[in-house]
Length: 48
Image 1 (cartoon, rainbow, N blue to C red):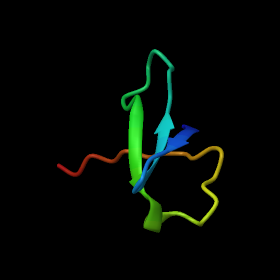
Image 2: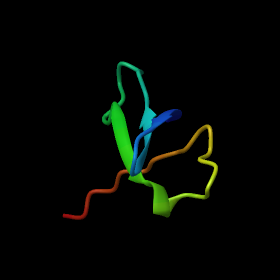
Image 3: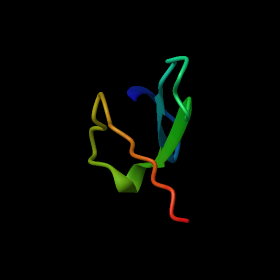
Image 4: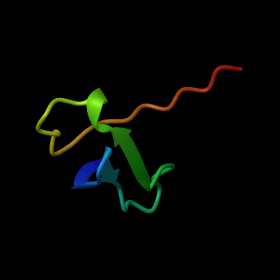
């Protein structure tokens, strides 16, 4: 996912791929370094 913008309390990442299961992800600022990374990899796991 690519960094899109920052809001007051979050950093916003987006992926516009057709097969993306998650188009937009909001991450709390405190969860990332002061300068948010330009690109992140998100892994989704299902626990059944």
